[in-house]
Length: 516
Image (cartoon, rainbow, N blue to C red; front, side):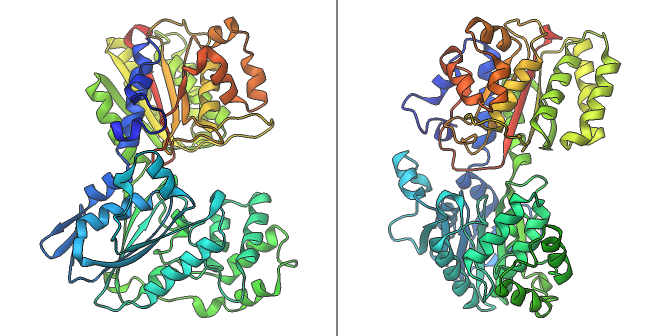
């Protein structure tokens, strides 16, 4: 665990875990740390890929065994891909004969500065590293990398194996607009759509239509080579076509669907001539079967669900009873905070108003992306543990809530969620072992701050009052980082530093027996 947990500050991360005297605070931090450790890029590759003699084996896949004849080429794109590629090269050895990966600008220097040398390629690596997409936006450098990846894929034969490594941030690192569109024209269209409120599905429809490599384009370029894609998912539900816009996932591209999206947001009439030329040629790009005869294999090797599995194991080691609520919590942060508050109150109600609380929880389900069956299952366990007086219950969840920006403060969705939950819990008795809630981003950075998130409990409101910090004022200004920085010297903040991965957020709600 130490490799994830001591990255920015010089003191050991276990010291960070113990910044508060409350044992549940420390426990919540350790559970979160285990979630992050379980989806490290080198670890997920090592757990999913192995060499058995002259074969490459993808773990857990029935048809996941491929012959090795010095025929493996690697391409990759995403924030975690450098570590993934480094581990893949160690495993495959001399059979890996070449590759190109597109990674964020400055990542190699950053990893060196933080002592993450195990995630860096060796000097004589067969894999070329190309940095680009500064500020997480496609640019000339990432376009050049995408062109190199396309050239490599197009040169492959049926005797070759293309190993594709994909992680969050991959879309910006693989821009390859269809001619005659320019990169700037493609960016302008997608930015205008996003600003107009287009959904991720609508954005993906347009991106795939205007990209050479997305929407199965990379796999099409590599045909007839065998393609194996190992994916670290940062999207709720792990939809293969949405992660980095699905470069190895074939999907039909319908001109009418793209036209409908552009017309819906009033962008078709003002679109440049190149966009209309691409739309006119869409018919010729439809119906290409890139995955026939099993030549493309897509495997999610790291996700929020996997992170929660590792969190559950650590919770058990700490003597907690873990319950996974859902890896797909979404919706407005105010609704999500209300959900966790209701669950805590339900667990602590001692039988009073439980029916009313349960009804409120069920009503919130659709707003926060949690199935009714999952909510009922969790409440049944909470009720059982309350009546039996059994230990500490650890409710785990993940996902990506949203925040409405109405102020100009510093913060992120995880810190705002923790702050709102703390406010919601203020009517519970702030005992030493009252419920504790943690929300943290697995990438180690929550918004434009150095924190991944924060820990809170029923005593947060009184602590803030004593220190003359108005929680509502900070929330109105979306200034959660400033609040937690000023509160008790920042002891509630979760600051793991550079984690080298991203599978969205992890939520930990610890409810002790004595609070029930």
